[in-house]
Image (cartoon, rainbow, N blue to C red; front, side, top):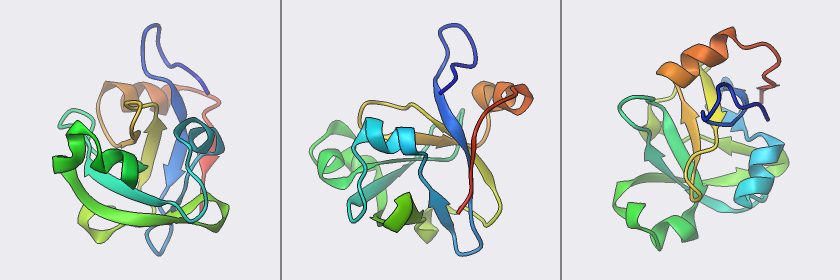
Length: 129
């Protein structure tokens, strides 16, 4: 898991949205955030600066300060796959950069400085459905 710049965010890899709106969660992210097959997850919108969305354990998010930002839910399916809710506005074949977010939620960003640095960085793993 590379850190793209000194003091910058750690990234898990590029995540590509599949034809049915599905993504594969990077394995290291599953370990760090405790994601397991069958787990209910909640989604929030990403920041204005980075765009995208964040995903975390629904139970943990409902008991946190960000519970008011929850916009949708999903289930982690077999092989660390999740079908993204339509509320996120994600489209097939879009690229997101999976980044270490808060301790509660994994970030999937679509723009901003970190995203731009990652586009030039060699060796970031790619996760496809």
